[in-house]
Amino acid sequence: MVRPGMRQYGQNVLEGQSEGRAPYVQYVTAPDVHFVKSREPRKQQQPERLDKMSNFSQGQDWDTAGWGSRAPPRGAAKQQALNSARRAGNVVTETKYGAATNKGAHSAANVNMRKLEEDTENFKHDAVDRSLSQALMKARMAKKMNQKQLGTLINEKPQVIAEYESGRAIPNGQIISKLNRALGVQLPRGPKKKKTPAN
Image: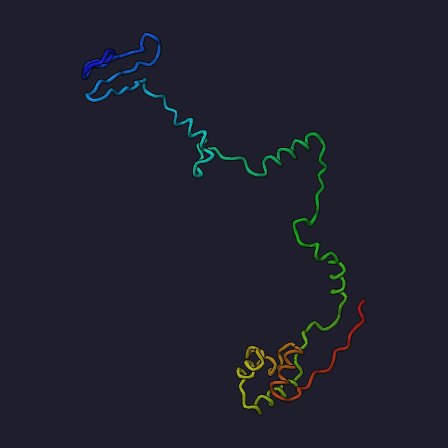
């Protein structure tokens, strides 16, 4: 049954063209009527949306980037500002001698050099006394130990024991005390040095 204002099945009706609006297309189908608004093809709005949503995207940066150009070096702006200040006469340049070296830690270098030149003492390290090295060797042999066993007993390397026995070691009070305790003897200590008054 066709009502007034309705068209037969399959017939297209264009309405609203004369009024300057987008045309409406009416499709007449069997049980009911569907109205479909037909428009011109949509303009692409997606790039605008992406620009608006670029802050919320997953770390993507939609800004344009150029290749092949290098950024100016970090110190370039400072150097340009310094050069312009020099041209204007606002900068005074001073040369600091020894600025690149670590001579600040040795400020009295000349005094130390003079003391070394004037010093006439013997410049040898103190060595273990011969009596200490022989007493150490006898005490170790009495305990029936080798140098490695004695070294592990006092937590020192075997080379340290060998140096003490040969007389090449620099005397260390802590090591001598350890040896006294480990061997159960009192090792002789060398004569004390006379202290010279500091100049």
